[in-house]
Length: 400
Image 1 (cartoon, helix red, strand yellow):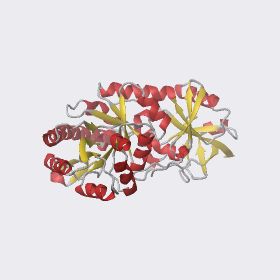
Image 2 (cartoon, rainbow, N blue to C red; image 1 turned 135 degrees about the vertical axis):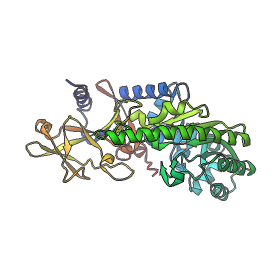
Image 3 (tube, helix red, strand yellow; image 1 turned 180 degrees about the vertical axis):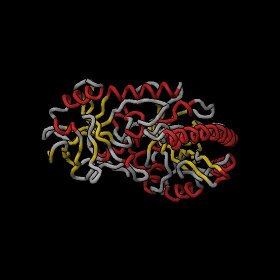
């Protein structure tokens, strides 16, 4: 029996009493992935990206481990909810225009002490001030650095379009703007190198593309390490008491951790290891989060149909954003239909061994987005479901 076949038998046995659709997290794999992130971070704390987890119970579990500290959130409403729930170090990774949220933040000492907001433009500071509604608490602020690699004098850009702040002078100027304004305190710098951390460098069947990605990423790491170091020096000249410099992502943990200027690493997807992380040479994780759909039809030889399953991930549309049928091995989508909202035909010889009501296990393309489809995660240890915990959705929250 292959390792994957053994996992299938274990998952089927553990969830035999549960009807699909359902989602699971294999805690043995989850914990092993957490340990690997800490190992690769080489002594620097890992801040957990909540966007990639979206389950309070699992955030609590990973933050109880040595080597993890703090949350990187994705909306202000989520940040405030987490802070009210007892998480005391929440870094909002994206700018917000949530005026009601800023009013709440500025009026509550507990929230203001726990949440740090992201800015990359003086207009963000103006918006926060206008939203205070009498709140006088000091708002903790982090600046975001543009990490993209620019080639040929800027004519070619590689990387996400995030912050407009790129040079040490630009970040130092905004740092001075924060420092001059009452009611704000600059505490950190963030830089997410998604073109390194979030792009696989070993694309199956495409050796030339994979080599080009590795060359690009090596150049990007060198350029960013030099520029990030200069940015941190420039900002520390304005704000010597800077608390943290955050960088990285699951795919670049060990490279970012090696930079002296970086004090903490961000990671989250590496806990679940969705399918987009199958194409990396820098690490190998264990798939920990899966969902199961029930077989509801047997249209013919070599074909079964499962209920639903059309759960595409965000990003540029393409086959790499689709879930993949994972267990049993050997199933594939019908190229004429793909995964559907209500039904999904699957082709392959393993279909002939599946009966009505059997489970087919899938892996989502990206990590936490799976939790937007399910209100609970069944936690498996060994061959048993040991707990069932709510996702954000299960607690009544869909923040985006």
